[in-house]
Length: 377
Image (tube, rainbow, N blue to C red; front, side):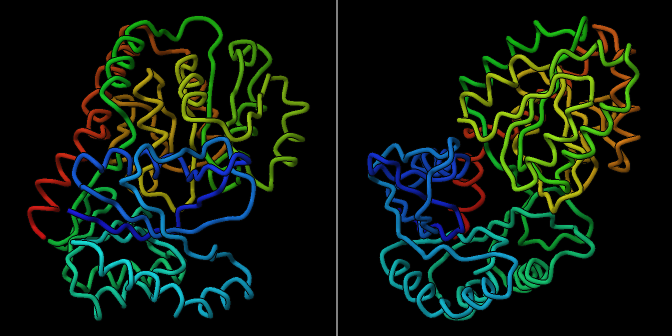
């Protein structure tokens, strides 16, 4: 069976000429070859330097079909998005003639015209993946429109979380991020972790205010001198235009912050392995960030906000700490509460995480794709 995936995933060429793409999506597609013979990935090519997190495809059974790099918040970017619509739809239509089914991954800028095109003009079987906050009350206009269109059409839609009045064709689906070997390693490592001594914290994601980076720095800076002595280091992994501002905030913090920039998957996992606590007090338009499941697999206790479906997986003091409101004050209080958790309670929390983590395995994902998606096409 041949599959076409339509997405906004960034692709690049390395200096050696090798094609690479955004790591989490490329890894997922590499595993989807267990369910499909050939995958055509229609996605965006950027003529810029590839970040460290970009990865190559592992098989020539994945064929990259280039779209122009579109998207952005400026008026010019939005006009370009519309101006290029005929070209985008022509490329998609030509590729759909080669395949048995499709998957469209949103929300994304091109979704405002690709979703109605697929719904009204395409007979090829397929399904949609909505990776954003399905239950967001006031989403950006484009996101809200795409969500409304997906509710009104009849093809399957995989979404983050389980919601009241969820349409029958919308399936709660965890985004995969862990191999079986990584799950085994995580189980063993979690049993060795404790909250004794100075703790290592980490954050992985876009370095921006909505993701909670500023809240993390303010929360930790506001701790007492004695409390700060109980923090070994805070790792911040990711890039963003606000990086210089965040670095300036940490200069007088009294705590050792390390800004790593973008890292490879293996490097990020090494940071999880040495950390005891994962921080993400986000207010961004999230579905369920894979980095939470990845960090939990390697024995991190997550302190996160309850936005979107996050609170459905992270139960306060059961599988982590979940903030009702993402503020620096609430995060600081949660950090202080860490030092009141004994070894047995910590291990109970890590044990409770395992059924959650297992849902994010590639094996579970491929099984569900075969039984709940392919068999229904």
